[in-house]
Amino acid sequence: MNRRWEFDALRGLMLVLMTFTHLPSRLSSPLGQPFGFVSAAEGFVLLSAVMAGMIYGRMARRDGIEAMERAFWKRALKVYLCQLALMLFLFTVVAMLGLARGEPAVTNLMSFYLQHPVLALPAAALLVYQPALMDILPMYVLFMLASPWVMAWGLRRGWGPVMALSVGLWVVAQFGVEMRLHGLLEHHLAFPVPWRDTGAFSLMAWQFLWVMGLWLGAGRQPHSPPHLRFPSWAVTLAVMLALVGLAWRHTMGQAPFGANVALNMVFDKWQLAPMRVLNLFALIVVVLRFGPWLAARMPRLRWLETLGMASLPVFCAHLVVVLLVLSIWGGSPTARPVWGDVLLVAGCFGILYAVARISVALDRLPPRGKGGRPAAPFSARPSPSPHAPVPVQAPTAAAASMPTSSARPAPLSPPSPPLGPVPPVPPAPL
Image 1 (spheres, one colour):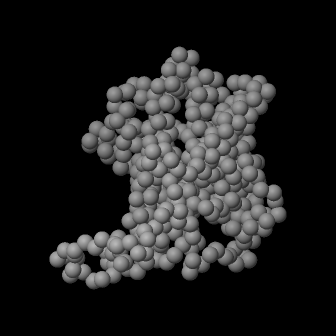
Image 2 (cartoon, helix red, strand yellow; image 1 turned 120 degrees about the horizontal axis):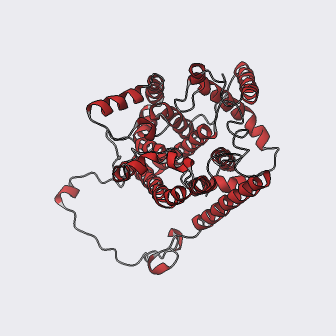
Image 3 (cartoon, rainbow, N blue to C red; image 1 turned 120 degrees about the vertical axis):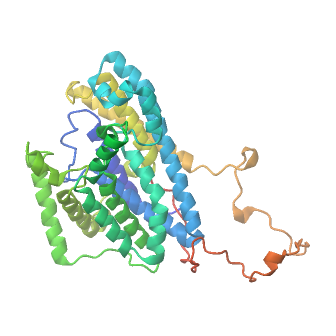
């Protein structure tokens, strides 16, 4: 199985930064958005989409669009079940601990559930109720459910219309369309879940990163341009913008204009605001231009790769740890002494690394056949003797009228030829 260790290491780095950001400690602020006005969430979504484009694009070329659709839906179901498990953990263990200790960090986090538990349960199952910290996986589920149609159109008819529509939705999202639609539903249909409890991420805005990642990943196929190349002036401009964003972030803090809320909105994370996208694009150009050179010269960080290989279990485990910390110590980053923060961070990452190692080990186990025995590979299974008679079934009238071709019909209409052979498919991304 072929893996891109660079992608695994980058996803592992994003998981580390997200953990530092969500875990209340003295490192939360300095390690939040450390490379400029871009958070680990943008990098993680984009990387996951690139890997999804690579993996499922190869699958579509090898097995057809229908196989790709089934793989996307299977992965979406797995992520959805993880979300349900996390919400159940929040509603039971975290609620019990937080209420027993009277922690505002927990009671504020799940205030809608505490006020309307009967309504919150089905709303959470429908991915409508999304408290803070619990709104990332629902976004992945919805994006993965839409991805088969996006990939099918892009692979068959080109990515130009897809990207144009995606950019258009991102532009519309900058005017707060989703919040206005929610207000109309709340006013006319008595929509029960408040806007603040439906998730902080604007789906109309963040779909742009996902679709762009699918496009970049699907383009890394045989007979397609393997790399994005930028002129020297674009690289120079990107380096300058990245350095300005880095210096500005660590000079002014995570709010670029201090207490000026209106100006800060041009860098808003949840709407994926224009200046944030500009900063992100600058970092992408820098990474694509200098990343291969750096990767060839620095030692491989295997522990980061391990975290990235098990991104979904590690992400879920980090939320469990963060929710337990919030329910026991609260959300204050200075609730513990310095040595307490050191022990907390060390214990947290020890748990995450153990989860990653176990998950990777389980993924490497051979598939089990019937009776609990490992399934034999295809090449090891006995083949019939060339001298043995082969039973032939009489063709039906419908079959007799069909052409004598062994090729399967194309999954989508109108029919089209196969997209070409591909190398083996690695495990699916988050």
